[in-house]
Each structure stands twice: as C-alpha cells, then as structure tokens.
Image 1 (cartoon, rainbow, N blue to C red):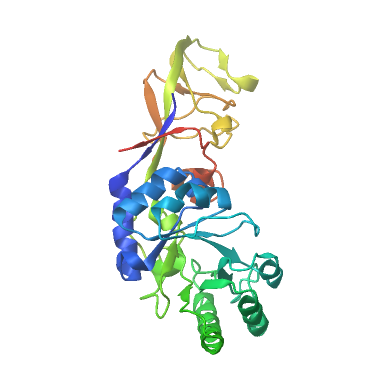
Image 2: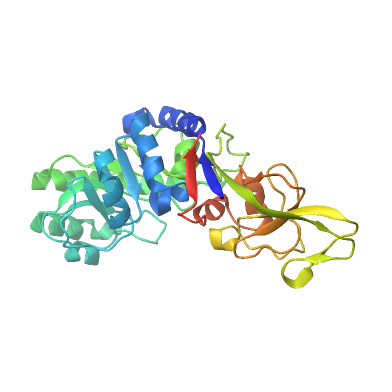
Length: 342
C-alpha cells in the first residue's frame, strides 16, 4: 500500500535553523494549515510540540480543534466567525471590519493588517474604528499581524511593508494603552521573510510554514539555506509483466515498447493527489527511473519489478516539470495515505 515517510531528523534540523533566525523556540509559530502542507496535521503538530514550539496556525476550526491540546495557542487563519464554544487556546484571524462585527462578544482574535498586499486586513486609516469596535465588543485582542507579498523576490517591497507595519504598530499600541488592553503580540515574518531578514525586530514571533517542511522560494541570489525536505512519497508494486516489442501500455497506449521489457504497475495515481501526467513526457522518480505511459486514477507504470519505489523525496524537480511550486506538489497529496515517521 502506498505511503508517505516523514523524516523527523530533517524536520527538527529545519526548526533548529528557523528558531535560530527567529530568536528561540518561543519566537516561532508553526504554520500547520492545509493538513500541515500535506504532511498530516496531527503528526506534524505532535512533532512540533515535542520540539518545544508553543504556537501553531491552521486553516479552519476543524483543524484547530484537532490539535488544540498540544499548544498554548492555535490561530485559525481562514475560517469564518462562529458562535460555537471553542477551546480557550483557539484564536481567530480577523481580516475585515465586517468580520469583527460578526464575532461573538469575548472572542479571542488576531487582527490582520493590510500593510501593502491588499488581499486581507484592516487598512491603516481604519485602525481607530477597528480598535473601538474590539473594545466595545470586549474582544480579546491577542495578536496583530500582516503578510508580505514579495518577501521571496529581489526587490525592496518587504522592507516597505515592514515599515508600514511598524507605523501601524505604534498606533495600535497607543490605542490599546488608552483602552487599558492587555499586551498584544505582533507578528509579520513568513518563511521567506524570516530567512531573509537579520532579525524579526520588535515582533514577538515569526510564522513559518513551507521552510519547516524543507523548502524555500527565495532565489539563491538573495540567500541559500540548508533546508531538508521532510516528506517522501512511496508507491508499492501491484503487478509485473513482460511488455512485448510493439505492445502499448495504459490509457491511449501512448507508450510503446521498442523491445521486450519488464514493466510493473504501482499503486499511486492522480486520485492520490499526484499530478496527472499524459505519458508523452516521462516523469522521473527519486532514483531517476522514468514512468511508462499515462498515469491512471490509481496507478502508473515503471520499468523493472522493484517492490516499492520512491516517487519523490524533493518536490522541487516535480514542481519545475509541472510548472508550479513545491507547495502544490505536497499539499495535493491524499490525506488518507499512511504517514510513517522515520
């Protein structure tokens, strides 16, 4: 049966590097959204907690509830406000004034600020109104954050957005003090920003996602880091046969044997979240062997008769072949595939 391996040593190696950049284990929030970028939410949350991280961020309430027992705080990044009673460790990212209005009184929130990405967040000119509403509704403002749009690109936009966030911080701190609010945690750096900057400055912590799992989109002209991919995808053999010269295999018969050859079928397909390949451009496995023919929903073919094959242990070459990014290769993987910690 196909499976995924999770390399614990690689994960901890990446966390060592990121925590050193952030200023310690208390300065890093583990971004575990979307099933921990395809690695398995509970598995990676338990490893992050074992390592000593205190905070995590997830996509929705369901993900938050499944790991709330492991962290001091779990931040829900995308879901809609709810009146459902939640664990006291769960907080909501609030991306608009309308979202603040929809929250129940007393909810724990992190206020999103638009520092220049223009995707989500309160604009600087709306800070006073947002803070007044937070105070009126007795919302627990536990954090304020922003997101950088170009931290992995060779331009100055990261520093422009950081300056915007720092200016907004001062306004929020002054208003919070006037209202007698408790201290607020500020956070802005994502993986690329954390790797790029010399320190997180006056922020309380950084949020790291893709770099924890061994990848960065930073060009080498900016910086290079010894990140180690954590996930590997393995397929197991279903059957073997001799494909005779002239015979064609799979849907459309796009691969034709030039001579008699031994081929085998393996138990991964596009139904398992691997990119569907059409058979005209072979896809290399981790050992360099090439696929034969078109991928099916549940299987694909290779030469030889190995009992199992590693389809990839580094998503970057596949991302390049399929004209995408490493994020998409790993997050698409079927959640029900067995994860094995090695």
